[in-house]
Image (tube, rainbow, N blue to C red; front, top):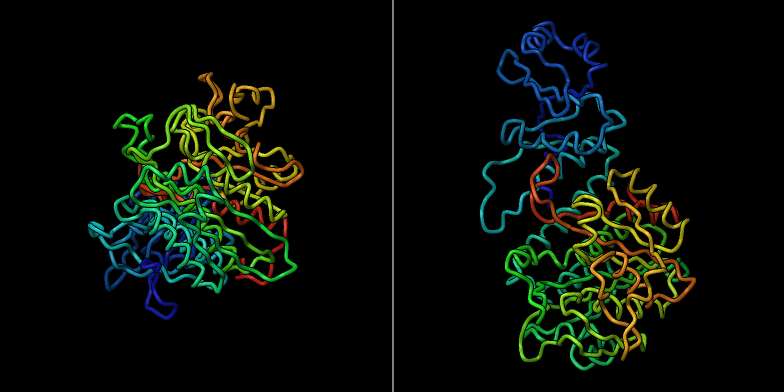
Length: 460
């Protein structure tokens, strides 16, 4: 799947890597002519600075500058397009940053080219030994990005459920897809959200792992397109709504990594695959919906549909009493107003769990930021005719309100965290091309490892 890699035995040019403090030592290791060339061109090892090295037969190597900041995968993300197309490279002096280099290279080489070829071929990397987990993360990220970038006319509820089946088949996991009357009875709020579309809603359930291992439940919001329903979005707000299944895509990437690394857990993966459309069958403002948990919800706004999808998934997962329950969703614009596009909002009532996940986020350069589950706002969800409403009448704290709504469907004492994601890059940066993004996926894998151990997976 990773088309940016060269075979281990393929002829490859040396790629040297240095920060400004190591530049003189590198110059001393290079041949006199190459060292003189770098000095003459003013190479200073600034971040993302790339210099090609001449040799007797033409191109003989290259040098990447790291700058003075900490080395991250993004330090290497520009290389596939900065080096000549189709050339093959190897890390000349693999260091402790080798895994970050491989991950950054692969993420920078990604392009969604299903309909239009990439403008140029990337340079290829022959990865060193010991970076298997970086390759697993890169492949999972490519898969997540592909899912999010796929146009909604080609990725509806049926196709998203089929992606879960394909993942299960690839890893020997069990998979069931719930639809029709069984969905109406078992996931009534989710069914109501999808009732307005001719593309019927589904819940895909994947189960993997050995009996006796701790159960980790993953719930993903899979709204394949969100018109806003009868509370119709303005056209500008609808443009990127193919990405409203980003939470489900991230959950699938997370599950793929857990299974490939064989972390010592069991998985229960739930994807709520729906389309929030407008028709005579669509749910309405002021409707009251049943939920799997038995709570009645008054619909204050049909564009707050993601929480109605997730509440039934959370209730289903909670019935299994998992050791950890995680949900991922492109839930609120308010989280983006608070934290911008790059920082998923983390909500959990469990301080120890929050610290484990935040530490994992720092470790993997896959950031998130904790926002409070402020109980003082819980009454904002009160309804005069139902157990709760799906929105608040106050135009404030929208991300917190969404998380508080979900918390009502998680039993007290169950270890739970909610991630409110953007799942998109608005612009292209090294390693992060414009389009779908697997936000928080690597951090959540590292968090699961912190909580439950490494297992016999691929090398770290």
